[in-house]
Image 1 (tube, rainbow, N blue to C red):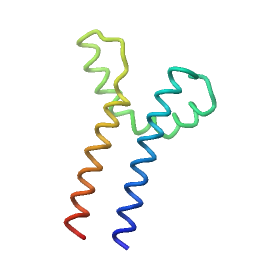
Image 2: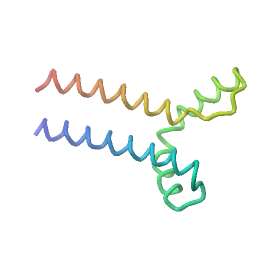
Image 3: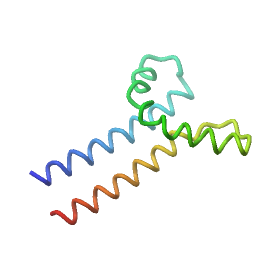
Length: 91
């Protein structure tokens, strides 16, 4: 049962990761598409804290780029590593 929960969380992390990458690509090539808005409804709440971080960093350096989704992917990877360590200790 615990292993099933672990596998489910890893699949969820992977889905969020792939959806984020698709969202980034769609923002470059088809920003008005339905798929872009659909993914945005689910990913924007996750990206919101990283958007604040991005605004603080880019406003100081005067860089007009949005790195918030990349920061989100890094944060997701950190959370995934923590979850893996917890489950390795439990299993």
